[in-house]
Image 1 (cartoon, rainbow, N blue to C red):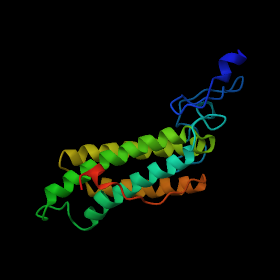
Image 2 (image 1 turned 180 degrees about the vertical axis):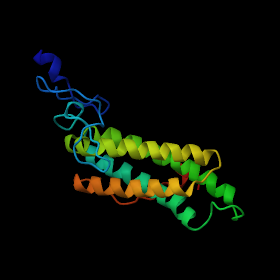
Image 3 (image 1 turned 90 degrees about the horizontal axis):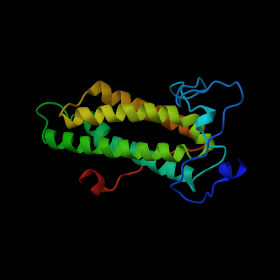
Image 4 (image 1 turned 90 degrees about the vertical axis):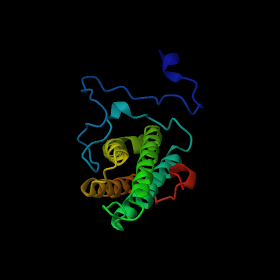
Length: 188
């Protein structure tokens, strides 16, 4: 049994090792624990690794989260605040197309941030629930923007979700700043 649990390690594409629940402890799905977090959801201890399973997981998380937040702010939130999505606005269609591409890119960065958070015990316990909630909101927003709809309430909701996520990440020792995405990622 010891050989089965030891594994080789060192690879960045290996699955994270998980702790087995204590005898008699209930097993739950990740993201439904009652521990603190922006949305009252965190990963269960059984879903989090006992030790880091990926090199530079926290640094990678900070980079991915910063790119997601920076992309949202530059291509979605700022144009929304400037009225670029309103009917009759000059270059409205172009702004919506760029916002849709930015939402897809930000969603992908959140997916990558989650992978990195799952590789770090502290980040896993605190941030998986908030990442899942924010990712779902970003995915919904991307779908609406692809359809040519720019819902102000949803944009405001995602902006609030990002700020709550930023606060939770800072509390877990992985505070991040907005990072400008490469122009080629969103289309210029």
